[in-house]
Image (cartoon, rainbow, N blue to C red; front, side):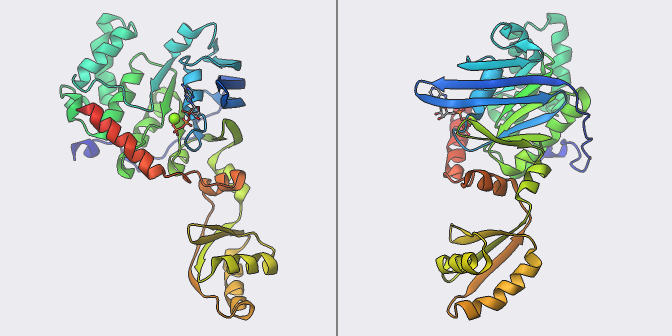
Length: 349
Ligand SMILES: Nc1ncnc2c1ncn2[C@@H]1O[C@H](COP(=O)(O)OP(=O)(O)OP(=O)(O)O)[C@@H](O)[C@H]1O
Ligand SMILES: [Mg+2]
């Protein structure tokens, strides 16, 4: 597939970016929609050159935060500075500094890639003599030059997303906002999009602010704010967040999970969560705990059978579970993604 052959080498390491002064400063931001508080008193800073992510479930307030930072939604309370400009008093200056890739697609599928980019240049007052060079540059950067004269409706989902990113770069923003950049795309294409985003950061030191509800996607970020019901419940590097959970994760299925959970709680003083026919618990040293558990269980409950047992290292899902008591994808996310994808497909026609 041409699109994938042209992709950057996934094996390239990502250099660690030096942390500098904040390019986004958010203090006590609140956004209410009538009685609903979509964003509830959040404060954070993003540093120049950072890839910063908001991770949270549906309705957590991710898009509302992005739209507020991008001056598209007015805050109810709080102060926000983007690239040193106030989002309320200096919204035009803020808009010159940022590029936005919205959660839902906004390309005109009846136009070619170049035509879409030309239209954006016009909207952003990119000087006419510079337009063709800039268009060529962003198409090259996203490996789309060979497809530039094709109608967007003939593009794959991954190519469209890359074109949206290319478009967001035309006016040379210092900060790129990506709202769910890879939702509905297959894992391989998602991976390629990430290679391009990292390339962008390496070449231009562009600051990336993104939202996602994909755990693996959040791993690409230098730092992540975990947001739930409009509140930031944790903010740190992915590694530090996972250290919060710290212990090994043990997942088992048994002939009677409720009984097994009770025994584990009574006998080992460990709390086991029952979910989707599985028991999950955290233990300090799974390789010692598991043989002890399997040795003791027949004595403690002779009829109890352990069917499957899995040990794994903590993930961001475990962090979310620990902080909120819920899984991030507890709602039927697959179905929601499918709906979004279908919406995108309909818009292509
Ligand atoms: N224009 C609006 N009017 C009223 N309520 C809104 C509006 N926009 C968002 N909301 C509500 O605010 C809350 C946060 O929505 P938001 O779109 O920010 O969530 P999200 O984290 O981006 O979710 P998703 O993962 O589904 O994109 C939700 O309860 C949503 O219904
Ligand atoms: Mg959203």
